[in-house]
Length: 337
Ligand SMILES: [Zn+2]
Image (cartoon, rainbow, N blue to C red):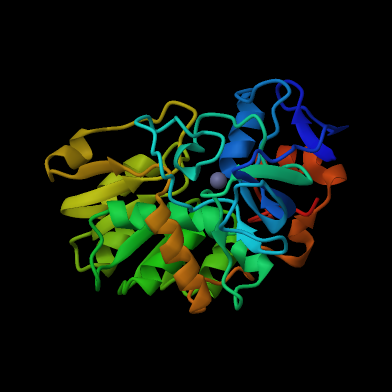
């Protein structure tokens, strides 16, 4: 089969590799789509992926072969590559790096979804509801991250919230907040295409932090108080500090994006207001099931996020990863092997 194999820092080669054989308790999945994740881009960019590894964890496809002991799946089943409940949960969050979206942030799986086929243990995938199209289902993994982040946060029904960064995770957090009963959702995003997507997805206001004073605007819009929760889905140099200054006394900044560089903080600006900083990482099986329910109800929209020319082939992988190091016009790119 064809696969995009890591061959050193910022180098992907399209190679012929052996098609994996499912073990007795595994299924073989023919991959239809695999989203290019910011974490894949970071591993590519900073040389954090092992030589010879195949990245990609945001995939969907069809079961094309089942091991002899598999009872849960049949050939032809549509599945998303995660969200199942591990019957033998590992004590370590990194224990199931190969299979579990609970640990996609750091570890580089040896055999991921930037390939034509992948094997998984039968507990690992989840069925895609009949009324959820493939183009939406491919967002299930990042959407589970978004659900997890909102659940980890102090957000409550009726709250205002800020989302900094309208990349895939930010736009999904925005949609989850809306489904979860947010009042006003304010988005801060400098890239015009991403800001536009945030507006299309129903943001109350979208700010350009390059030309507007987002902190002042947010404080004013919330009657001088600030918001209860700000989500940092950008991990840009200034966003953590901005978030800490735009939440109200006792408010919370929920960090979901990972900064791979030093982030400057001026603590005096926020410490006196007893602001809380909290992180969210990965997702649980419950988060995935919530995502599939929200998708089945039409509460998550992929169209402003994955544009028609966002579906790419193997031959565009190298160039696409390079482009995503400085994202501009594209929001979510998806490999169609
Ligand atoms: Zn991801």
